[in-house]
Image (cartoon, helix red, strand yellow):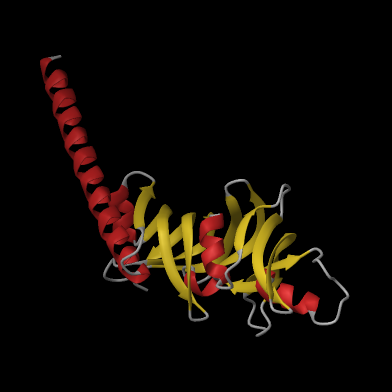
Length: 238
């Protein structure tokens, strides 16, 4: 019985040491991966990484991770020569194949969600228009000052925000904001003047991890919510 007790104690101690070492290694890998993702995104925002599955060390030795969760906050990137900011982006990368030096990898598939606040959507419009919630899912309110016949008039319109295929035919998506109707609609020159301020397209695909694409969007009081998905998605360093 004494020998059995000693064996059990040694087993518990070794198990605790292995668990501790495994969690330390996972935490170290998470921090390093977050740093590399942060570097790719530039100096703006923060990145947090959570490597799922236990034990981590056996996954690392095989260069295969079950799941990696990524949280980005306040990320700013450049698309079409214009800066666009995401309040948050949360993504889960499944079946991640690590590269040889463990600096990144490629996920067989990934899903995620993102949020663009109305303040950031206002900045992205670059037309001087102010955007806010439009009172229903998929709607935004756009307020803009327009010069008509020497007078500056401020108009607010309810617009629909949709996801459209990019015109380049490469499979990318654009976020499109279009007013449902505008004051002076049908009057030559007036409608186009207003729509120059209220209507715009914005590409976001180029700022996302390679292989991750927009698949749907909607709006509510907090902003425009994005749904993301992809296959063979690059996760830093590959």
